[in-house]
Image (cartoon, rainbow, N blue to C red; front, side, top):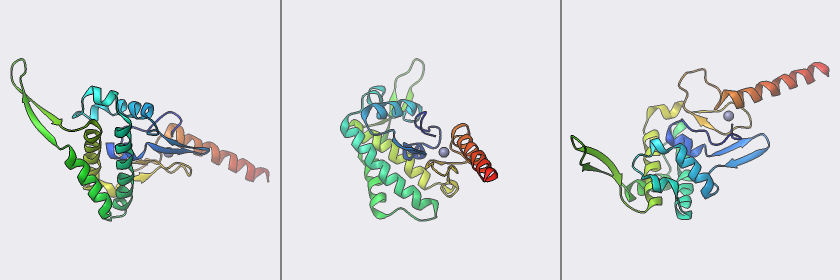
Length: 194
Ligand SMILES: [Zn+2]
C-alpha cells in the first residue's frame, strides 16, 4: 500500500504513523511537505473536529514540523506499547506537552432551538493540530487493543493496522495482498522451472 496515497481509516494514531510507507522499490512520506499535509488533514477532517476548516486547509511550515515531530514520538511509543512496554520518558513528555499546549475546552453556543455544546482548542494552529493528534495517540496507548496492532504481512510493507477481524493480514488486501500473491506465484514458477 502506498502508491495510492496514505492509508486512512485505522485509529487516527495509526494513520499518523502510517504516513510513512514503503513499496518494494520506494519509500513514501505523505507528510514530507505542505501539499501532503493538507491532503492528509483533509482525509482526516471528520476526526479532527476541534480544528477549524481554515486550520485544516492552510497548515504552515511550523505546523508541519510540529506534526512530524509528534509522529516520531508516536511511532516510538506505539512500538513499545505493542510489546507491553510503557512509553520512554521523552516520548511520554512530548505527548503530554502537546496535549497540554492546547487542551479541549467546551463552549456553550446558541442554536436554533436549544443551545449546543462545542469542543474547541485554543492556541496556534500547529499546537492545536499536534494536541488533537497527541490525544489520539494517548488514547491508543492506554487502550488494551494496542497489543493486537499488527504489521502488514507484505514483506516490504511497514504499515500498521488494528485488525477488526482476526484473519486480516494486509493493510490493504487489494494492494499488498495481491502483490504478495503475484510474487509467490512467480517464485513457485521459478522453482518449478529450475
Ligand atoms: Zn501493506
